Image (cartoon, rainbow, N blue to C red; front, top):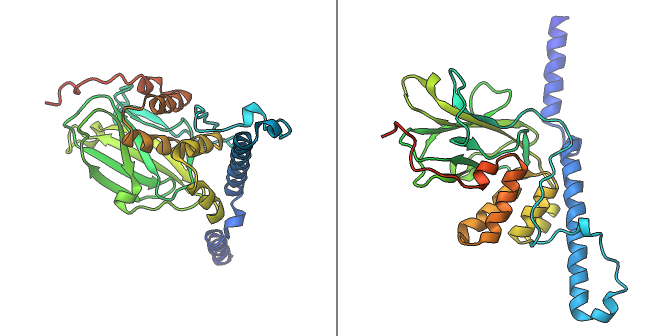
Length: 282
């Protein structure tokens, strides 16, 4: 009987791994939400075109409700997923005694497992002060024993918001799995229990090629707003951050990113209170 049960479990596990995309209900839910939002954006775009062509006839057009309009000029509004998720953000502290070090080292994620529609997303974290401590990135699937990635990363040259691009490490996330990712400052490589550690969580939701194609034709500001409205945190933040990297003096872009930070409970990062160096690291 035990052998039969074991065989049954092996078959069930194999079937789960081979399940087609359609059995991932959350993927379908996210895709429908994205599709609905994009349709509203397209409707507004058509209305704007009509206004430009013929203001007199525009009065007969059907306008979307004001609250449904998403445009590049809007502040992005992050709508967390309705489905309950485990805690995604863990504040900085040491592994041994969990002494909190607020604002010193923080992963920029909501306090729940947040979504991405990219298998190679970008992760963001915040370092308030420069440090000479080694820094380590670890990514591990929630139920795995061994990490998907564990690597030392370069110490930032300036404090503030930092970026980790999975593409730089050749790492791809698998659909539907929850991954935890950690940033660790290592004061003593021989006593890893003293690490200053922060943690985030991510889940990759796959969308159709057709929907990806529609998104690819939109500018980054509007994509940031669309992703935020659909509850896709990582990509909403990445799109606006990419724009800031190329337009560092654009105050409006920074205001939009600050709004996203405040919406997930990180106003201290939005206020950009940065010091020079962590005491005792010279």
